[in-house]
Amino acid sequence: MVHTLSTVAFQGIQALLIEVQVQFVSGSLPGLSIVGLPDRAVNEAKERVRSALQSIGIGFPCKRITINLSPANILKEGSHYDLPLVLGLMMGLEILPPELKYTISLGELSLDGSIKPVSGVLSSALLAASLGRTLICPGACGPEARWGGELSILAPHHLLELVNHFKGSQVLSVPEPILDSIEPSTEHFGLIHGQIHAKWGLIISISGGHNALMVGPPGTGKSLLAKSTMSLLNPLTPREALEVTMIHSLSGVLKEGRGLMRQRPFRAPHHSASMASMVGGGLKGTPGEISMAHQGILFLDELPEFSRSVLDALRQSMETRQAVVSRANYHVTYPANFQLISAMNPCKCGYLGKTSRECRQAPECGTRYQNNLSGPLLDRIDLFMNVSDIDFKAFPDPTPFDELEYTRALIRQAQDRQKLRYQDQNFYCNAQCPSTLLDHALDMDLDSKNILLKAANRFDFSMRGYYRVARVAQTISDLEQAEKILPSHITQALSYRVAHHLR
Image 1 (cartoon, rainbow, N blue to C red):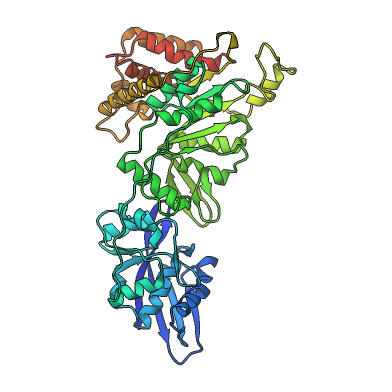
Image 2 (cartoon, rainbow, N blue to C red):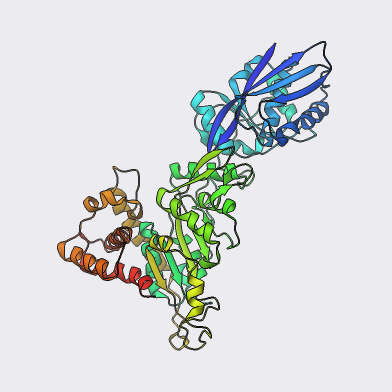
């Protein structure tokens, strides 16, 4: 007789249903075989299952046992197959009822029978809810699973708790959903001296979702400015929170006991990051940094120090807002709707253009340093900001906190106008508006359009660059609550774009 129950495999952030088939054969040499394209972690589950059963007083059957993971053409990898394997064995031993075939289970076993947390529980809960099945997951992952919708959840911490539940001697409590806390930002604009031009540029960037690049010598506050943008971000919407939490859960970085994420991610990978760590991939095709920054900010400090191949790989994701990982044995797509904020020194030593400490190899030092940034990559950046040294003779006081609150309110008003403008679309900010819709979505008078056309011819803008200036001008118009895009909005947007073309 074959006993069946279900578990999951992951393709991107989606969970795929996997059927676990357990067959006992008498009259053959005893042993346990797992077939169906298992990886090493799944094969090693044999010993964990054997020890977990012995720890709760169940002897391992002296029979020939074959476990098939179907469909057999999908690679099964990870330790979350431990729990369905041991449940299938206990079904064959008639310790657990056959009704388990209507459940979806996942979890890692310890040798003492405790059930350890695994990644991908939220995706599994969404699948179980869509199929109307009960989800069995580790107790530590129960709060995460509760956000999967209306479904029945069993979240034991130990294998014995699950056995007693089905025997009727113990009732497993329903896990409570948990909202992750929002940690207050320790850096915000109210603590930064000066840099008015860069601050306003970042306000435009956050308001419209535009990519930005800050250029300046060391110690001028570029990294602090980037980190301060976290104080200006809205919390995640419920739909965004589900996507972000699924990605972080699948990556295994979601801390034990955490629930639905509310704070937008801020990812700042080191410039030595590899292609797989940035875009995604590796042996298991896990999400990369650009997917971990989904619905948040990807901050790349010292942009030219990153590998040229890594930077060029970002270009497609900046347009499609997806990360496509293709390897010989898998092809997955992760969401990657991130906002790029980057910073760099003007040259290798950092002092090109500095009056008090001039670069000794100018201008070759700056030319060689910036050659790592390709034209197509720079063309996808909307705002270029020169961050200069602060004059200590006119050292300003930090911005009062109530002015920071005013800045937040200003950004919220601009974002509300964009949500209303794009309410019938599948995007919600100016930076995401495709060029095919931009001419109809933007309200630009004739004088503004003529200024933009002249600037495009003067500085040899590409069509992408032309429309990016128009999007930034629309965001400035939204910040000023203007009815139309005025010539002053175009010239201000051009000042942030032309800074790159004049270098």
